[in-house]
Length: 81
Image 1 (cartoon, one colour):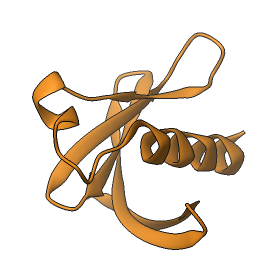
Image 2 (cartoon, rainbow, N blue to C red):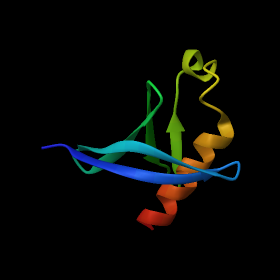
Image 3 (cartoon, rainbow, N blue to C red):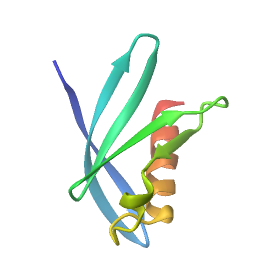
Image 4 (cartoon, rainbow, N blue to C red):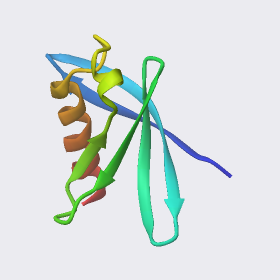
């Protein structure tokens, strides 16, 4: 069973909608968010703030900006804390 959901994120004055899914592994979890055709994983750090796990080759994509990733991470934090 996959836990698919949609998340609305405000970025640069515009509401954008992304599909995501919860990935469980033992006692840990990650959240996979699909941005255009790129899969980005978000995981909690030691302080339970979410961080994006992105390869350098993916960051060259113009649809993946650090500001957008930060907006998604903040939205996840607000929903899950």
